Image (cartoon, rainbow, N blue to C red; front, side):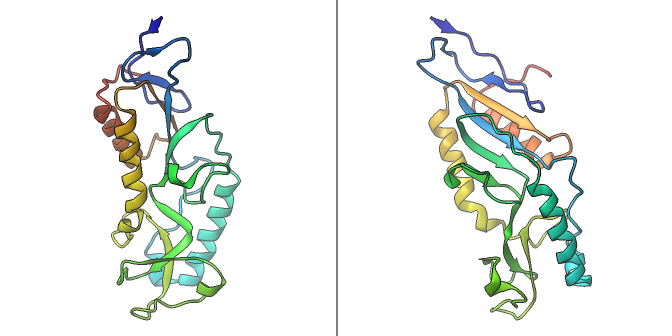
Length: 206
């Protein structure tokens, strides 16, 4: 018995089927992709310009926001194949790091404020108060802030490649797009639309 799959609808917290038909008896299970935006209960991160104006204040505000962010539950659906998120507070508990793409970086990594060497370092005691070993400039979080042209996106290339490898493997199968907190996130909304197209699916209105 074959059940016709539904066309995709991306909406907060609701999963919809996309792709080709799948077996209703459970022989072929849907592949779940989760797209998670910034929780509305958490204030936005401070502007990237603050690291040039007042680094100490910038780090204080940043750490406060990230601490609040870490208190927000992920509430991911079971058997997620890949998580794409605007959150910067690290890997969700229990998730394989190979199945996670932090679209805006991670709070536990740092980079040069000038992005001079295109490198990132883990944020720990060895980098507390640490200056860039290449140019001697200060360090900032490896996080993409609003209107941030200095974020080192290349450090995310491995995770981005894994995402599209997953897309290739699941093409033509039943897929579930599970989305939350995307209302004001243009990056994730564009990515959701690209996934629809790459998986050869047409939206059918919310």
